[in-house]
Length: 79
Image (cartoon, rainbow, N blue to C red; front, side):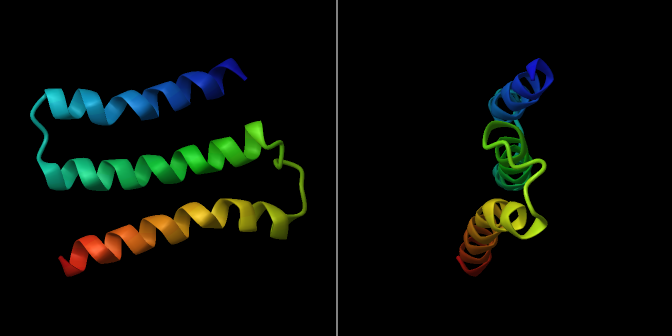
């Protein structure tokens, strides 16, 4: 469980560190999108304890992140 906490902490800190190092805004946006997906998988599996749940329930719980990221990426692409 400590490993999951550390990974979530790293995922939260990574965009801030990248910004301070001078990363481009486009890189930051895609980094955040990727990290949201990683964090969603970890949160659903470990904190919602769905690691051993039926596959459909697990995919439905993780699917919200994919839908949100796809919608935001679509809006970003249009604008």
